[in-house]
Length: 135
Image (cartoon, rainbow, N blue to C red; front, side, top):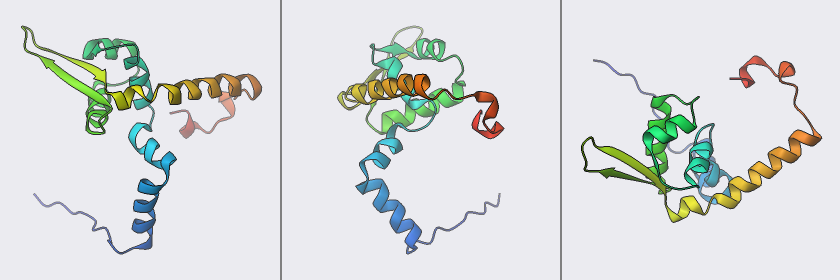
């Protein structure tokens, strides 16, 4: 099987800027860890305590299984979530937040406050948004 991969030019200014932004800008660093549609929702649901995979899936019905698994793995790699596999029959897995994950509570609370304020002061009319922003 032939796979064509694009080689990244290691000495490019764009690559240097990207590396510097990811390591030096706190906002970009944080968004790199928790950014996206589902990660903040997963973290928010784990703030109330340990959850089994099926509980998370039930709490976030719009997420696909593939995305939930992928984001849980990424959150685990970023040391925000602990995955504990319990050796029982049938086996199941529990997810909980690390101390770093729990420390995101004020960040998520601030996002909730901002959203509530912004919705009241500047309501968005969904029918005026371009279609690609609604997906």
